[in-house]
Length: 397
Ligand code: NAD
Ligand code: USQ
Image (cartoon, rainbow, N blue to C red; front, top):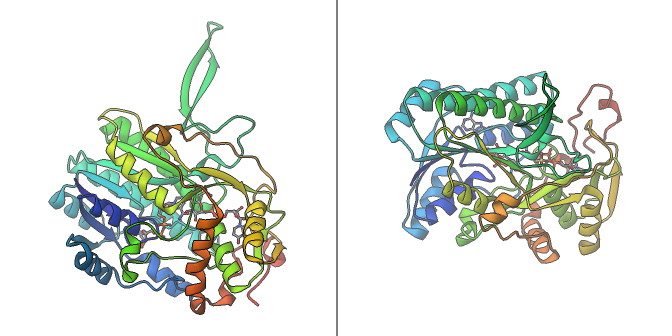
């Protein structure tokens, strides 16, 4: 297939592009490199040294003989360029990662809220609009989030996207209908993914766009089979207070002897998936596209759930690190249970990589190798969800 990977320079997009290219597909990365600009804005950099996208694709060609093309396009702001590009290249499938993905970044200030809503909502709408306008029947696979559901399973497992509900009819009977599981976003970023869901529902219904939405949990790890092939193919690794996700942060903190930063009691339960499984799931989803006219296909892309304090204790046991219980900069439930259905990927053959000490140790090794690149002052999470939380949180030392 000819596959466009939108946001293919990012943490999940890069290893996905390599995996799809290794699988024999013609891969085109479309990215505006905004993530690299945000690093500059925040004064941080990936823990791992990342080459330019052009250099990365050159090394990929040198190592495998395969070509990945790069196209510099802003999905949110260059509608005409995007439309012309899609019309010229007419990909068979499109994988859409191209959004601002950090909840803390989206809550930093009014400007960051506006940026996240404008960027994410316009990127998704421009894409759907352009596909419809040029009559492109490509399968669109979008990376969504478990956060659209909120994180409470209220005693029943969270289904894959749709919830059957019984409604009392005027005749006194019960009619059953499947509705989108009620959205319950916990940040402006997560809210944009809820808005995306509505855009997908509309374009699937009105224009027959074939869409798969992957409700993904927190991705951890760094290497995949393909990023290991050469040091310059290495994946990015975020550890700072805005973009670093919880388990990867704990692993780098353990590697440099920084107390593990648990927010609040650490009673928050979240869904997780290893980067290698994330890439496999996207491949599996691409292999089973919905038919034209079908409703949006939704998968829960996660393999296990864990409580934050249990993860901190696990990493502390393994590494000897200390655990610090800090004031929570976010507005979220202090404790929650989370049970999630993921039967659809299991049925398609996913064999989950679970969190075990060997793999965790491997990430600590990556972290130790590049520990000299860490700026400790960028570790504290300083983005507060509300103005009344702001004075209570830890600041850069
Ligand atoms: P990332 O920030 O590393 O990558 C996103 C890429 O999209 C970047 O290269 C960025 O430059 C590009 N981009 C952003 N806006 C763009 C625009 N307007 N036009 C063109 N390119 C644009 O993020 P990631 O961690 O790789 O996540 C990828 C997707 O997966 C996101 O949509 C995110 O919401 C979702 N997701 C990520 C995780 C995770 O733990 N990392 C978990 C669940 C879901
Ligand atoms: N947390 C800590 N200590 C830290 C960092 C985070 O205790 O140092 C806590 C947070 O308060 C939160 C939980 O860990 O309760 C998860 O935080 P996170 O930053 O790892 O994940 P989140 O903000 O939810 O966002 C990440 C990705 C996002 C994706 C989402 C999937 O950045 O793109 O959509 O995970 S999910 O969490 O399933 O919604």
